[in-house]
Amino acid sequence: MSKINSKYLITGKLLARNTILNFIGQVLPLIVAVITLPFIIRGLGTERFGLLSLAWVVLGYFTIFDLGLGRATTKFIAEALGKGEPDQVSSLVWTAVVIQMILSSLGVLVLINITPFLVERILNIPPELTGEARNIFYLLAVAIPLILITSSFSGVLEAAQRFDLLNAVRVPSSISTYLLTLIGLALGFQLTGIVVLILIARFGTLLALIILAMRIFPKIRKFSLHFVLFPRLFTYGVWIMVSNVVSPILMYLDRFLIASLLSVAAVAYYTVPYEALTRLWIIPGSLIMSLFPAFSALGRIEHQQRIEALFARSIKYTLLILGPIILVLALFSEDILTIWVGADFAIQSTVIMQILAFGVLINSIANIPYALLQGVGRPDIIAKFHLLELPLYMGTAWFLINRWGITGAAAAWTIRVLLDAILLFAAAFRIGRFSQRLFITDGSLLGSLALILFGLLTYGLKILTNVLPLFIQVGFLAILFTVFGWVVWRNVLDNLDRDTILKAIKLHKAV
Image (tube, rainbow, N blue to C red; front, side, top):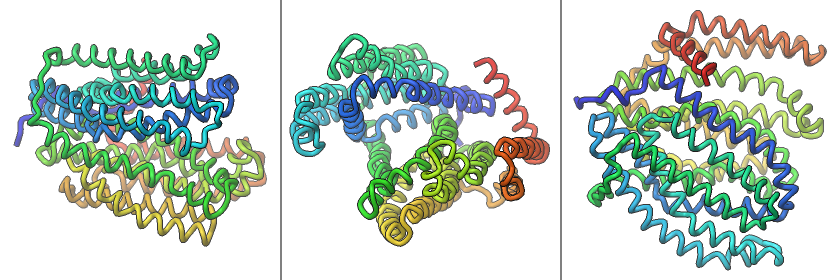
């Protein structure tokens, strides 16, 4: 059994702290986006805003030239720290950065060469904007190395569990994208000038991450390159890349099929509840950001009991936090949609929201075995699952959309994430050698029963009080939430859980 460095082991308190920091780090830019986007759209105009959005999407896809090295850097640095081998950090970082520079140079050349074809033939950009679009894509091509190298230095902070420093950089960087656009508009800049401002800010972000990484690990200041590490980084990273290529297809295929088989209006009725529900992924996403380096630091099976405890508690917390929210959104979906987007949308989208809500909960919980498999060095399993799911999902979605319209699309998506969850959990239990009694001993089974009871009571409440004003229904719902919380606190959570939550509340107040 390898010796583990306890300095880089994640405790319940640290997990709660990191999760809260990551949650805040995702919510703050989202709030700024909601506030500023109407002004940005008005200032740029619909066509230029669409052009800017397309440009960022194209840049996002060109990060495939990273070959998953950013994620690989986080994994192997966390693993080295967990084994008490911090001397490996410098060689891992600089080897990844040099390889990313080489690969990103290829990405630069490809994007520069295909830009005229993209602008003039593929993206259907208005003739009066083609010159501006060409300049923007050239600028973004030059930015590819900047984006890829940033992922490696972010990985250093993630591996060291320094999410406080990471979010201190990421939050201003994300917010600056929106604020600098507004500043550029106020100064009378064209879209090209605004993109330059944003890229300058991204360069500042990279410098800040490099300085912080060198502060935590001073040995990074000494350049250390070992190409012998490349096969190790590449073998891991290439499977991450496969998942990164397939995942967006799995995510957006339903909308393309709806538009092709039904209508653009049907896409809107489907997308509104989908986008609303998937915003909840911020909650499990904040946890996963902390779990991945934690699982990586623990290794594969050398510290099975620690991995098992972290795995089980993470599932329990996700289920108990997200489950009640999902149930309420599903049962009150008609009321929510009516208030938010109107009665017409509610008629078309209520059933869609209810089906997708179930899928979002399943997918959120499945993120735990996803992080575990990546953390213990088996991203190949995840990528193979995605490749298996793709043709199955395409056939299922096509059949169900033809048969039941957007309801069929929601059902197909939920079936796909259910299959994904089953495969991920089966693989996690096999790789982790977990006990079959895991969910009984950690309280997840009892928590699930409490959640089912809460759902039945909420459904009964909705039926009995449906004729009453909504604010009265919400009042009764608040009482049920209180009872559910009390039952969970007394009967589902153990002393360690309660201590972790109390410390997390104190941290939240401090933040």
